[in-house]
Length: 304
Image (tube, rainbow, N blue to C red; front, side, top):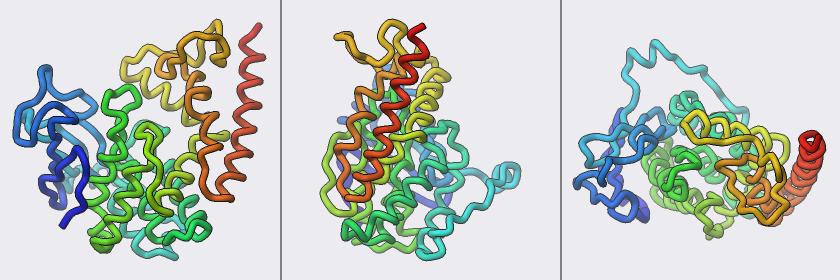
């Protein structure tokens, strides 16, 4: 029996096709029903599913996730990647092979293969400290961003739920049992900041720490501006900072879709205090200090 996921129904899966029904509380349409007025949002119609699969809206009824054909794989053969940690955990190697094609195709640099691998390494490292299974922690990290819902999408908070559902389908193919899949899926479901859920297990705490560490420090700065550029490429009017209040220090309403630097006050400067494990807390404090140094320099440079 598949783990039960809120607001999502997996309809079927095969080697080259994953069908996910979106019920009424997500898109105002029941699986097998019709699309809402105007159809589904473009980024839901073609939502990358991070396991070699690409989403296509079909007839207003389901999101139909189709894999690449053999010829396409020959024409666009991805690089073969093995993280050293996968040698310690053989199922990680199998899982990475399954999700790598979709990650390689990701054009949002804030949520690409390198992001997933950074989170993966931290999750494996932090697991023992939290009393979690490193094998399951690594698996959770590898599938935690299988569905990348754009920041500007009204369905942004559904990203972790959608990734958890996609993970529930791909994990058994890498050799994970039903009980293990359930544990990993729950950790992924409570991972994201936008969802606002606390972790319900040590595994969830490890995944949350690992993912949030990648949002701060030097790499967090790079990812924040990469995300802003990705939104701009999709037609969202944006800029690096508010010209009159770069750091959001006045009483104006913060808007990190319009002003990338607003994201520091809204989220990034708040992450260090949310860490669970001692190692993650120490690393987060170092990265937090770097964020503050960067923001001070940014303020000085744009004040002229």
